[in-house]
Image (cartoon, rainbow, N blue to C red):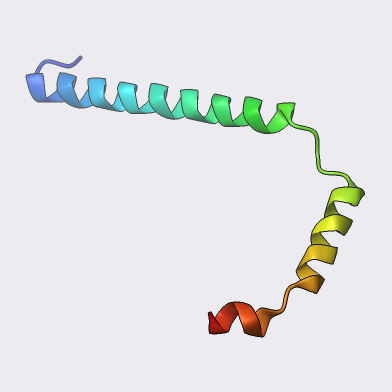
Length: 61
């Protein structure tokens, strides 16, 4: 099937790429699914902090 060295090398690179991407996808899925979603209280605290920031002072330095 893969008679030439070039074809075998390409096939091995593609296989390695597929395995690497699969491991990354599985790790991302496990990481994101194991975390609980932020609660509304967290969103409220963040919005209060954002409202309290003075943007003109932050941008002027």
